[in-house]
Image 1 (tube, protein in one colour):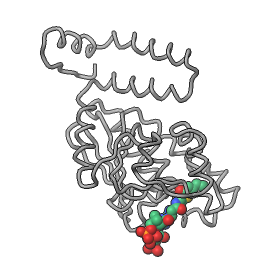
Image 2 (tube, protein in one colour; image 1 turned 90 degrees about the vertical axis):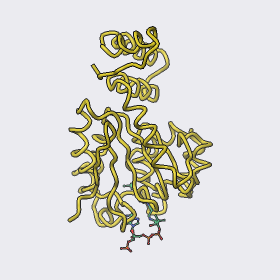
Image 3 (cartoon, protein in one colour; image 1 turned 180 degrees about the horizontal axis):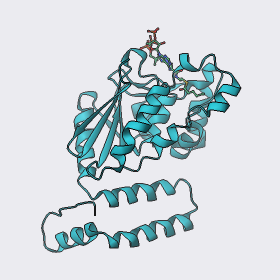
Length: 256
Ligand code: HXC
């Protein structure tokens, strides 16, 4: 069996390509475990500064694998805690960009939302069509989509099961940028290289602090941010970054 993901390293950037194009990159357990297991050591590698997650031109991912789930019983789903390993992917601490071309439906949209930002080709289509299958989003869709786009847009998408295009997704705050399809990877790679060029400790702290904004009250969130900000003064990168500014030169970050 072909490995369900392709992992390529390009300098400090790791490009991860979902590799089930014939099934529109449907996310079965093998894909889920490969994303969690294969990326964990890279996440801990100080030489890796950013992940890009992408699918094919036609489909980022058309959702969880319906054929794998169709016959499962409640006891099996609950007993296996089906989908639980997605939390390991979501918890990776290295910044990750979803580069979405074509369909990002159901679990595909949820996978994109587990990333720190979504860059969408102008061909991208997003949706949570689980209601059409007699279920609801199960990889975080009701929670993450609602936090990202607000209650009424989330309800609209989740209850009707309709798709929205890249322009609507950008308007409602789901995606960071819409990019012409033929330039998607070029622009995503440029952003990933920029991020990976900064100190990894600061980048990890930045994403951790932004993520807390979705979980904490404002006062706790601001204290959390300030403590991390203080902590960064223990890093060589803070000394280097500020010295470089004062000396009018480019900083050389080491992640230390
Ligand atoms: C398994 C899938 C699949 C999926 C597509 N395929 N999506 N297999 N799970 N989610 C398979 C098809 O069965 C087909 O296999 C092949 O991929 C090509 O699909 P087509 O439908 O022929 O392609 P196309 O006409 O281009 O349409 C693309 C599409 C459509 C619009 C994305 O495939 C589609 O609507 N897929 C389902 C989308 C969906 O409902 N996603 C939500 C899943 S549930 P064969 O063998 O015929 O070639 C979910 C969360 C579940 O994500 C949470 C609750 C537990």
